[in-house]
Image (cartoon, rainbow, N blue to C red; front, top):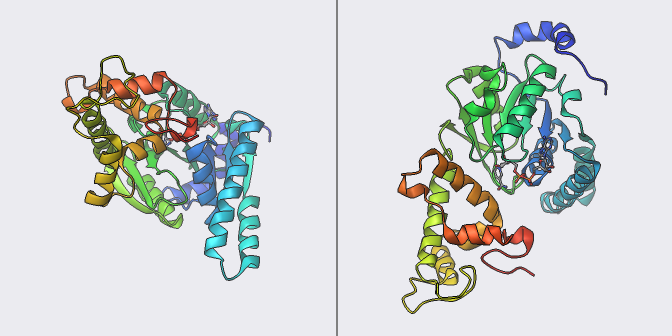
Length: 331
Ligand SMILES: NC(=O)c1ccc[n+]([C@@H]2O[C@H](COP(=O)([O-])OP(=O)(O)OC[C@H]3O[C@@H](n4cnc5c(N)ncnc54)[C@H](O)[C@@H]3O)[C@@H](O)[C@H]2O)c1
């Protein structure tokens, strides 16, 4: 589709904007930027709940992979949801897939979208560049949201002229299964934007909770220090004389093995996964990135101290399930 200027968007949307200023935005059309793990899941759930979706990424290959992943995930969902009626399941799948189109140029597709959900690489400069550009092309009423796990929403929103229409919409992995969405309100986010996003989250079948723009929001602020503490427990038991820290050597004074820590938290605390299983599932690079960001922000905070074992595993490209090895081997 050809580029549409902000001027043009202003004129075509002026009548709807006047009434929209008084009312919440009812999100019907969603643009999801980034077709990776999170973006593909967000696109899938939005399409499955009656929204039209454009999924944007940088290459045809990535988008083809995203669509294939969405199709596979939808097949599982429809098998479960329509166990008694496979024909209805097929129709649900086809309808959902036909609601998702793809593009490699975000600016050309946001002129008539109600909501942009960004799920690209966790890098402030790249996110700022993206939103600065989209700000010029998106319709006046369009809400911008970031799925960032660790960056300040305010810092991302500052690249735009619509800080009042900017918020965090933090989904959890895997998006089709995880019920929670954290809706992040910055000091500049309008009540109308915030409420529109709460409503949107509910239409997705999710349970929204609200949080201020603080590091890690709710879940990661509590979860990441817990995961890092589990690594510290494990580090205290590692034989540091010659063995790789990511190896399996333990000193006689070992606090506990990672296997026992995982079992303990599952059977003793009722967690569905142990901390090392969860670390491998989330991706060790993601956890390291979040902790590094917090450490940079507040280096003296004892909770925000980096982990030598985590750093070593990431340097060795052992990032967890996605690379076949992290704390555990998956090959
Ligand atoms: N992985 C998680 O468990 C998780 C959970 C919640 C939030 N998040 C956040 O979601 C975001 C995405 O994470 P992910 O795990 O899906 O990453 P990912 O690496 O799986 O996917 C990111 C995608 O964005 C694309 N991309 C990068 N720059 C782009 C650009 N300028 N324009 C369009 N596409 C671009 C990449 O090609 C890639 O396909 C991050 O901000 C992350 O912090 C991740």
